[in-house]
Image (cartoon, rainbow, N blue to C red; front, side, top):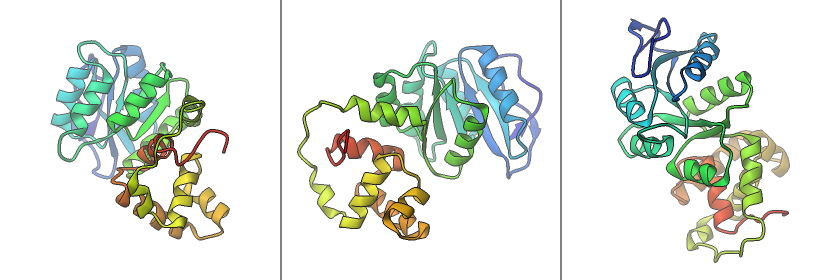
Length: 237
C-alpha cells in the first residue's frame, strides 16, 4: 500500500508503493476538510501513511476490503451507512482491520455502540494530534485505546444502575486475574497495574492475556465494558 498526493475526493486511494513497515491507514469521514486535516497529521509521521479516503460508510467498507489497511479512522455520522454499521460489517469479516472511532459526538449511545461493535479505540475529534498518532500506533500493535474522557463516561453511565447477577465465567478467573480486570476497568495501563499490584509488567501482560482468553474478549476495551456490565466494578469503588 502507498502514500502519495491527497486524493481529490472520497473513495480514492494512493498508487505509489510505500514501505511495508509503514502503518497503512484509511480515513472515513464525510467532511473533506476533516479528511485533509487528518491526512496532514498522519503523513508527518515516518512510520505511517494514508492509503485511501472514504466519504460515507458504504465507501469505507468497500475501500477497506480492497486496500486491507492496518487501521481505519471511522467517523460515526456519515451518509448512506453510518460508521457503527460500517464497523460491524468490517469486523464481521476474516482478518479485519483495527478501527478507531473518531467523532465529535460523545453521547453514551454512540460510545457503547462503538465499543460493542468492536472498535479498538474511541477518540473525540477534539483530541490532540499527538493523541491521535499514539492511538494509531497502539491499535496497529494489537492493543486497544480509550480516550480518558470516554472511560469517565463509561463509569458515569453506570452510576445508579442496579447491580446485575455476576456471569458464571467470572468464577473462572483467579483472584489475581480478577484484580487485574478491576484495575483495567479503572483505566490503568499495564505499567500502572504492575505498580499497584507490586509485580512485573510482563506478569501483568500475562494476566491480561488470560483474562481476555477466559472471558472470550478481544481486547481491553471490551474488558472495560464487560467489567462494568457484569457488575464486577461499580462507580465510586
